Structure formats: C-alpha cells, structure tokens
Image 1 (cartoon, rainbow, N blue to C red):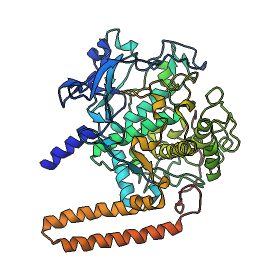
Image 2 (tube, rainbow, N blue to C red):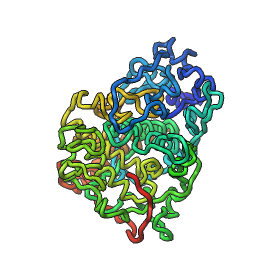
Image 3 (cartoon, rainbow, N blue to C red):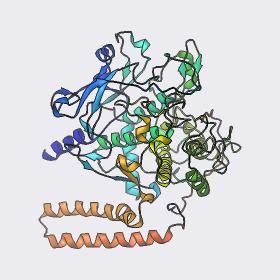
Image 4 (cartoon, rainbow, N blue to C red):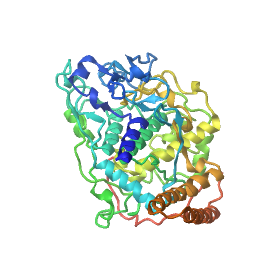
Length: 540
C-alpha cells in the first residue's frame, strides 16, 4: 500500500504535461469566462497560489508583425494563440509547471521542484531486445489508454457558441493526443464554404519554430508516457539514420516489417499492424469544414524505399549532416522554406545539404525520411501516426542540439519579427496549454533535462549505456535477496559479476564502433524485400 501512495505522489509532483485542452477548462464555464486557471489540489487554490507555485493572470501575446505568407486576420483560432479560447491562464513561478502549476517544469523533480535530473535518450539499435520491447509495449499502452488530463477540440471556437454554450471536446488516447496536436498545428485554415481553405499556413513547420516546437512536443510526449507507465526512467530512443541503406528499424522486432501480403501494410507479426490511424483525411475535413475528431481511419501505411526517387534518391549521409551543422545562420531571407544558407531550412529539408540553397521539388534531411517511408509518415498532418516519427524526430532534435553547441547562438539569432505567422520569438506555441514561447526553447536540451547518448563523452556513455542498466538489475536482485534473508556477501558477489559483464560488453561494443567525428553506428540490420510500390499523396 505504501508503494502505491509513493507512486501516485510521484505522478502528481514530477511531471509537466502540456498538450491541448486541460479537462478542467474544456467546458462552458471555461469558454464563457475565457479563463483556464485550474485548482491545484495540493492547497485548494487556483494555480497553487496559496503555496506560491503560481497565479492566474492575463495572457499577453506578442504584437510583433509576422511575414506576408498568411494575409488573413481573425479567422483562425490559432492566430494570437490562445486568445480565441482563453485570455487568462496560470503563470507558474520558479521551477513549477503544468496547467495548474502543480507539477515541475522540464528537468526538475521533487516536492518543491528543486532537484535537477538529466535523462539520456539512447540509440534504439544499441538497446537490448528487452528494452526495445518495453518501448514498443509502452507505445501500445499509450495507444489504448484514454488520457486523463487532456481532451481535444472537435469544432472551431465559433461553433461552440459565443458564450461557450455548445462545448465540443472529446476524450482521446495518449498516443493519438499527440497525433491530433501535430495535425492541429499544421492543418489548413477554413475560409468559409466547402473546400475553401488557406493551405499556406503551418505553426510548427517551414520556419523558425520547427525545431523548438518539436523539441517541446517530444518532451511532453515522453513525459506523458512516463506518467502512464510509472517508469520515470523512460526516454524516447532515436534512430541514427545517417548512411543507412534501408529502414533499419522496419523489422518485426522493432517498428514493424513489411507485410508479405501487401507491401503498403505492416507485417501481422508486429503489434503496429493492428493500429488505426487518425487525422489523415485532410480533403474530407476541408470539404466539410470540420476538424479531425480522432476517429479511426484505417490501418497504418508504410512502404519504405519505394518513394519518388527523383525527389528523394536516398537517406541522408554523415557528410550531409556535417555540412548542415556547419551552417552558422539559424534563419535567413524570408525565414520560410525558400531561405538559403539557413540551418533550420536545410535541416528541415527544403534546402540542399551540400550547397545550402533552397531546392523546390526536392526533399532532403528531415523531410526525406518522411517521404522515404512512403505512407502515413509522408503527409505532414498525419505523420505522427507512425511510431517511427518519434525515433526520427529525436535524432533531428539531436542534430539541432549539435548545432546549438557548435555555434552557441545568442537569443537574438532567433527571429523576433517577420517570420511566418506563429514562428516569431514571442509567439506562444500552438496548441499547448500552459503556454510556451518559441524563443524560450532556443536553448540546449540540457536546460530541459535530457541528453543524447552519442553526444556524451566516452566515460559517460559507458555509465549510461552499460553500467546503469546492470546497476538497475543489481538493485532488483538486492531487493529480492534482502526479502529472502540472504546475507550481504552474496549481494556483493552478484553485483561484482554484473559489473564485470558490463565492462566486457562495453569493450566489445567500443571496438566495433565506426571511426567518425560524430557519434557511432552499429552493424546494419537487414530489412525485408524492397519490392513493390505505393501511390500515396504526399505533401511534405
């Protein structure tokens, strides 16, 4: 009983969850008052004010002008986020966070959020089979568990009534919550009438916020899985796709191999073959002027390697990553997909990773992975349906981290004005609540409490990749032996054996590492046949 109390206390205190609409605010009262300042149960006050955790305050949005790419005003709920829904929210003090300030901000733990802790994201190909399967089981649990803290909007603010008399929100599972968020931030703007939309708008892609927004997005996804599973050591792994000849993670032991019956489907031997995608019928939503309501829309599609080779001839190389990291300017020119010699635009994949010049009609770097998967991943709005999205974006985030460490840019390197709508420094990220400004996340991942295994020095890599897992096993054995009444001498002997095994495994693996100025790669896995072709509509 005591362990259960501790578990729920940890859940309550340690995790910042930032997604769409907090349940306490998704009702007529919240819409009518335009206030989202929920009570913190710890002291019974709004935003934990009585405990000094935060206070309810007016939302002040940036008035810096955005670029000409979006010529409309006042017709999209995402403009000047979150004012269409709320103009008063919690502002948390110190290291407190969460929509009611009852949690801790990224990287901080403990009752008073005073303990900094750094988690390490690892290469999925270096993880043990048991660790890989645990990751897959966590994703499947998230796919089948309704999120307890957040709901999604199934209609525009106008459809909910002037005074919120017709609130339209819906439950959603934890995995699809993030699929919906990625859809919502990049969907078209409804202009009125069937199919009458503005397509050239995206609050998380094609400009400066691409990297900070996805950094916040992944960190919250990671935290929601921790809350769901109670595994506070969980981190999203990454796939190092540099120089990969094929989809190394597309095996039934990992993210799902190719079906022998239909090359566009996942192998029935993988749990992902039973997943239903959401938010993929973009033209249907536009014709009905309706938001995606997260209803299942068919199986997960993927056909890696059968992409348009004129657009994506192969996966990115180490040399292309190195060139990308070497570019000194974060943004240039019009600050959009046509920018030349822009680190962000090259990494996102609208510019060449060999010249730095924009290349319309080509998909490079980040974009090339999406197109290479040739299925659900290849449409911007629905791409997060494929769990490879997580592995891919974690590695993209690590390249962003390399660039930050290499160039150590000042905050002024991030555009304050004239970026496409939603991307200026002071703009709040759509559609997160509580609120996050883009420029605040133009910082090292160490400020957010996580690190990448291949960016650690060799000694730290030994501890994180090999020593730590064995010490965790030793701790479990220790507890078992104590419960069985066995003397400490046996415990010490077992720990010593585990340490020796860990050291030998480290040496063996270290000898196999590829000589490179950037990270390591493991022996390539063999994927299934690359035969067949797919005919998917792609927009990325």
